[in-house]
Image 1 (tube, one colour):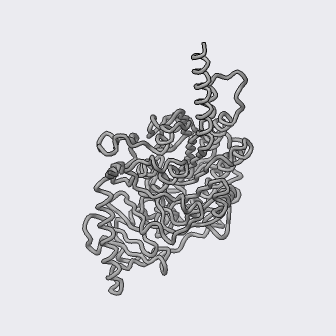
Image 2 (cartoon, one colour):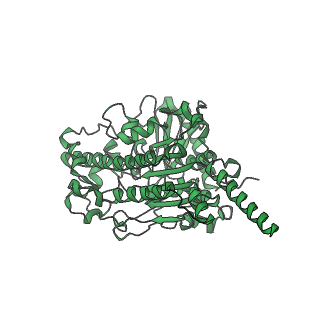
Image 3 (cartoon, rainbow, N blue to C red):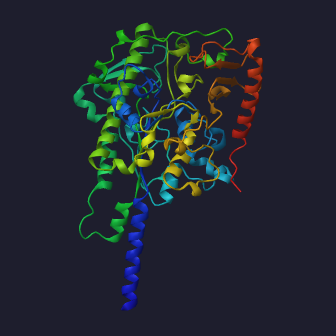
Length: 500
């Protein structure tokens, strides 16, 4: 009898010890937007139309030079979720099996995704809608999961979104391209239909999960129920906007009139490689001036609607008293061109398509000095993995093959001048680019041949209008950047190596 009582007391003690350890761990809310560039409120001096992202930025750190490792949905998401360059994990297309690298690379056999890492350490992990590649449209209407790593999640929710089957007014804006899922088109919905849309449904399900995690433990609950409820959570919410088609309620479109849109001016020199210009309007889209303006206005309307869903999540955290226990990350898989260089959409290696929004808000007194600040050093999306690992208190358990660098010190107000020398990105058509604080060097193909290279000086030419690769005064800088590029690409292609 005494042994039984002692055993019961010991089990009860272990349960309470587990509570204490888990409760000290922060919750994590990861919000991923699709195809969103940095022309949004936190990154602009005027025309703020994303009040909820502005609010989040005021509560955290905005990274003003964060770069995607591949300006295409599938490879970028697999990269940031694994903490590895695309050439290291081998995911360089919109593959629907992002965890396949584990089967082909011995060093990665037991390498978890970010979510999988936290699940292994007792977190409740949940995915809502698009985190990896997904057919939008063409899949999501059937509630398909798309690409996923099922072992990462305790719970996964696939939205069955109506998309182009919504009851709205659809207008094709790209006469040369009517391919379902890649053309430019807009759909204006009645405001009463906002709650039927994919991102609204995703936010609602995420809020339901937050309600569940914050709910009172019922009287008489078993120890198993108590432990399950008391686990910290890792909740990943994927919004499908701003992926085409651009769908939003009428009230979102009302604030963005095509006649008020100013198309970007640009200069494209004769020495720009043809591979860099394949996404130009006249080659793929065939939009006239009005259609281009409508496309930009529709994009901005979709941003506004997506921002409202971010606001609903932030409001829920506040209402449920979860905000002070939750790290909130907002990120996009990559940027998006809207007429810069005459180019549109993604897969280019211009600044506008490779740069991505990254906002991280960590509540608590240790982070007060970082609230509302901006970090302008070079960062990469693969830095998110080690950052969350360190913020969660698991730095010593980080997988040894992670290629990103933790940003936790920056979030704590400890600001080195430059943590990284460069950001590295690749794309289709054999393109790769290195971005430093001062330069962007891009190469299309294996060897440097002059005609397949681009060199832009960001201090004097932030819009990347003048390719300096032929400038005799820049040959020393060009040589240095070629060497850096070769070293970085070789390292990325050699694959990750486990730490000794």
